[in-house]
Length: 231
Image (cartoon, rainbow, N blue to C red; front, side, top):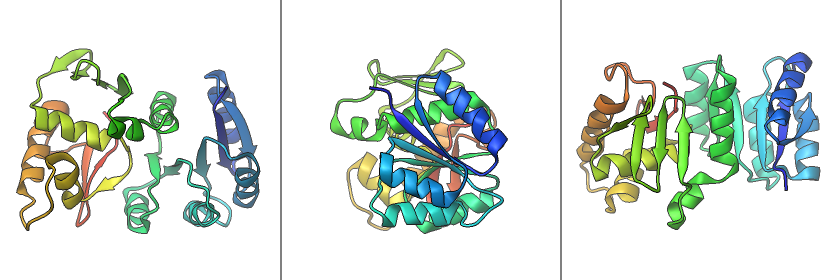
């Protein structure tokens, strides 16, 4: 059965472009040109994933996300965001929603959709991981426990690999250092988060083009780290 995508986009030209491109990938597309209509269609059709880009009309992105969650719709949501400030606002709302920052390439959007719609995070946690994940120039082969960049293998320690997979399982989600200590290291926070920062630093040295200006694993001040998948 084809997966259903609900696309909420108030620019009708962009809506048609997205619907055409995503439909060509085999998805069933449900179109909404306003947030209120999108909320109605989400309740009616229960899509597998919801994409929201509302810039010119009210209610906006964050309000619609909140209304969807309050309506009991917990399907994955992807937002189009235009700035780091918006990303920080989204993180503070704690709605567990992914995002992609504009401008972006359609290939990036498709990868992010694939990660979310096939529930990669749950598969990773269940011990039955998806075999292959791709984020731009970074690829993760979970069957062979292998990470590639530009098709070439990257030598990671087991801890670095586990941390990368944990972050990549939910692109756009900010993980606190305390969460990562528990999920990756297996112990609760005892006042020292340095192992996380140290491992992130080593990981950046291996996967980022410019480790001092990271694009793939980004710090959110006072909150933690987020995997963007951007390369």
